[in-house]
Image: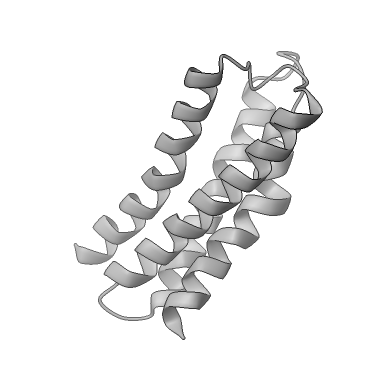
Length: 115
């Protein structure tokens, strides 16, 4: 049960922070952002993805890096699902960032904790 809580907490750290970013900024995640928002969202997203991976690894009863990897896999799965389910809704820039930058950041957070 502790593993499930660790993974859920790590995933929600990223998910909730992402929802807050888009809600507060008013930026539609399916519309191309300004260059400034793009850069800020990359830094913000990577920081919270790393925090999610770190938290999952920290709360894991054992195999901390595996817990962070599961969080990263959930991030990938949600981004891929979003691309297919919201096909035609607009730009997929935010989902691609999750796939190529946030997922490695989540693994990096787990790695930092596992060390």
